[in-house]
Length: 365
Ligand SMILES: Cc1cc2nc3c(=O)[nH]c(=O)nc-3n(C[C@H](O)[C@H](O)[C@H](O)COP(=O)(O)O)c2cc1C
Image 1: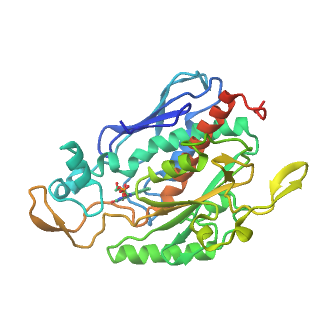
Image 2 (image 1 turned 90 degrees about the vertical axis):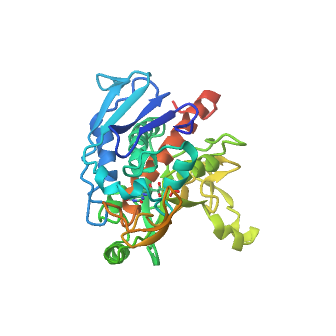
Image 3 (image 1 turned 180 degrees about the vertical axis):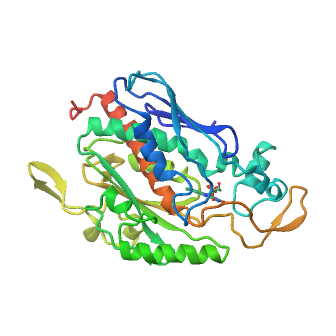
């Protein structure tokens, strides 16, 4: 039931972490868009495991195959199916988890809801499910860059535990983000973050923080009040990602400590356009984009699976302890950066197509 996202750009992901493979079916992609496996692969390579010593050591190349919906390098307007085979599955690492629920993972709730679960790895709750999202995100980015020539989405790590980066949000580019393994454009902070992740991992523990995402080049008018407000759909997209705990757009919870006179974004004329002098709104007002940068932050929880012995309960309701085996991300953030970008692109692509369907007066050519 809950495996499809979007109204006009509809994305359905499938697959479990230790099944035959994972992927996506994208319906509603306009025809004649140039798209290749190489473009999708570029995004998947930023998400794949084993990129550095601070990510899981599972060895997956995550090579994608477009099965349908593309002919001679162009979309057909028919469903696009993308498949990635699982190769380096080690179900034997999870034998204990078949009986014992991992604290704060999805084992207990999946077992309770469905009465059955693929206990090898995280099953459907594994971050491998997000491969389909990243593949769809690559297509969404392509559509958006055709509709809006200045479109750009950049996500990056702004905080890990108590290390907070200093980043000029309006200037940051993807190349600054990918300069280090943490994916934090403040290189001094990134070094401290990397050392922290390694130390916490050596202690058999996990650590996490916050990803910020900025989207540029989105015109005013995207968003469908009242239930599909742009920030509501972005929040749902982000909170549907594994291990996410919080979402704030623009001033976010900081707004609660400001007065109206401080928080309001004054309108002004700039280069013949109505703009705002500040951007506490995060580029969205009344659930509709206002043409400014859209920016938001996503808070994650530390990886549930840790090497330390923890209290738990077995399926047969016996109290037990569990110290995880297998390969895990000591910090999920570096690999979550392209996933956040993908979900932002999926939401914005869906809304861009919905705005075109509405026949807006600012309809892109
Ligand atoms: C990029 C990424 C990598 C992850 N890697 C792991 C992991 O190695 N081990 C783990 O226990 N959880 C990992 N998670 C988190 C689990 O998928 C998730 O926490 C779990 O399914 C419980 O769901 P919930 O946190 O959404 O409640 C990862 C999440 C992301 C976004």
